[in-house]
Amino acid sequence: MKALVLEGVEKLEIEDIKAQDLKPNEVLINTAYAGICGTDHALYAGLPGSADAVPPIVLGHENSGVVAEVGSEVTDLKPGDRVSVDPNIYCGQCEYCLTDRPELCNNLSAVGVTRNGGLEQQFTAPASVVYQVPDNVSLKAAATVEPISCAVHGIKLLKLTPYQKALVIGDGFMGQLFAQILQAYGVHQVDLAGRNEAKLANNKENFGVTNTFNTETDKIPADYDVVIEAVGLPQTQEQAIEATKKGAQVLMFGVGKPTQKFSMNTYEVFQKQLTIQGSFINPYSFKDSLAMLSSGKLNVEDLISHVLTLEEVEDFLTGKITNVSKAVVKVGDQD
Ligand SMILES: NC(=O)c1ccc[n+]([C@@H]2O[C@H](COP(=O)([O-])OP(=O)(O)OC[C@H]3O[C@@H](n4cnc5c(N)ncnc54)[C@H](O)[C@@H]3O)[C@@H](O)[C@H]2O)c1
Ligand SMILES: [Zn+2]
Ligand SMILES: [Zn+2]
Image (cartoon, rainbow, N blue to C red; front, side):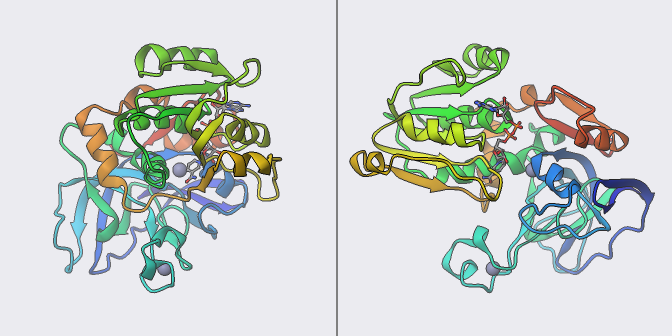
């Protein structure tokens, strides 16, 4: 079958490879769509994602498809089921798995990172990470459930209540998702700060955002109960702390460079009694993400700007394809 194989640093090749053998607890999936994101940029450049990718490997950790075959121990899935796959596989044995924090697993493995992912016509995954997709959710949208679930995990780490006023910093795919998800979780006012005037205006007009700010030219008031940083730069991390009011919670969601630091007034942390929360990947959030898509509380289709072919993925990763809001790769012919 046709696969896009990472053969080494910045080396991708279309190859004809054999499907993986199916283990008793696994599902074989005909890939429909595979989303690509910043993690794939890192893996392509030879840097780790949630774990190290060792070539040769097929990337693609944001996958949807249709079940082709199930192993002998699989109970709740059958051929023909439309599915979305959580790439992260936890060991179930380490200190973190045994204390209800599997995302911090010491032995994390992942579809599209440590084992072959969705940038090929068929891939396998343990049934425990394969979720059925409601009939009214497209397989294109279902390929974005992984990033949606990262946002949902971050949201679940906060204490949210309707009276709060929230600010999202970052007008990329994740920031725009957060703006909608916070509303779905009942927060009564969500404001968005970014650099792209068209995206800011669109979120105000069509996605329920109340006020928008340009992070480079506007002064953001210190008026928020919840601030989500979804850029990962020192200046936006500083802005996130500065936008808090007393008792606020800050979610540091954006990923900076491993050596990056930002400066923070620690007196402010004391005096405002701030909570600063990190967020890593997306355990047990797929059901919530799929429910929000199915109920119409979350519109992701309008945030997907590019549908690529396997042949175009390298042009995306090398920056030849520009103005990408969110890209998914159409791998199979199911919709
Ligand atoms: N914690 C997690 O589990 C997790 C999961 C997914 C993504 N992320 C991180 O979230 C961040 C956002 O991801 P994304 O997919 O939206 O990325 P993206 O590349 O689509 O968007 C980044 C956005 O930041 C905006 N931006 C850049 N500089 C800015 C500034 N100074 N002020 C305001 N906005 C600015 C850009 O306009 C762009 O829209 C990244 O750092 C990514 O690595 C974290
Ligand atoms: Zn991703
Ligand atoms: Zn573990």
